[in-house]
Length: 187
Image (cartoon, rainbow, N blue to C red; front, side):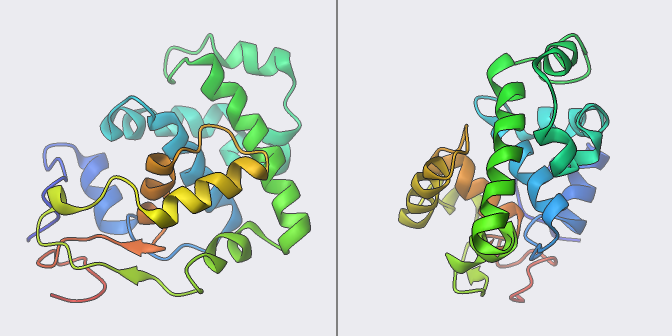
């Protein structure tokens, strides 16, 4: 079975993530929030590190229930920083709460985060022709525009590279390699 070249075949979490999640158009608010947070945690780290710690993050952040995360106290966030099973970066942990609060504001303004984010692509997945994952961009003019707007909305750790990774993960942009069997555009 041919997958994208970036998939670490020896890590079942990586394979499952690629095969069942990455690049699938996502519209569920909680799932969008989780992916958004995971992409912010990745800044400066490998995706494998984030995936390996994903279940611990889900546990400490109430399965990414946006309202619960938005209401977390400083003391709760400080306690999370003691957990050796997560990425213990204070700025990223506190950004998770800030991003939950921003998500709630975006939901009030636009009806849902889903409506807000998919507006940027006209509610249609952008299908790129990627022969090799090394040819995929790290950021684009679109991710720069969205990152700027997300910051305006109050989001943290949302540079254009993290935003582009989120767009790929949530299926707004399809960067599966052309010969990947999971490419929704077909090979």
